[in-house]
Amino acid sequence: MLLGRLVVRALIWLIRGFSMLPPGASQRFAQALNAATRPFVVDSLGSIGGARVLGHAGMEAAMDRVTGRPTRTLEHASERLLDRGMHFPVGWDPPRDDMTGQDVLHYGTQHHQHHRRQLTLSNAHDH
Image: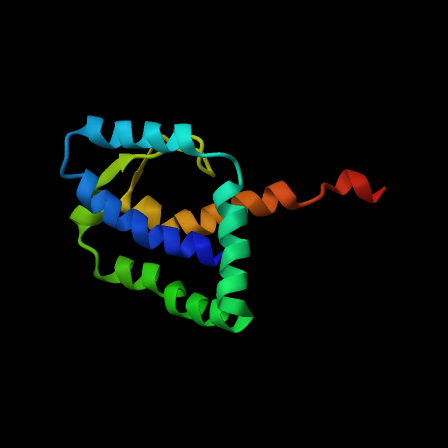
């Protein structure tokens, strides 16, 4: 979850930059990221590395710092920022071709829910 919240912070800056460029710029960037991304590699390595470097107490402190940021950004963001958008890699979870600033502020939670559904056993195994 911490990694997802940190990614949201970076994505807001990317939207600010790419939304001022021609649409083809973010589309090419998204295609390059899509081609270079392997499933779960960033999620796995980021989580393992973060836990080893920061430890549990450090991860807790970092999570406390970043959890409120999307809310504060949403409270202070202009309609223009929330409406700005750019192309995103369709290989990211959950897959989307483009996202606005408002979409990105919800991305960390959606990303977590996507992986939680993947890792949840179905009720069929309970019988």
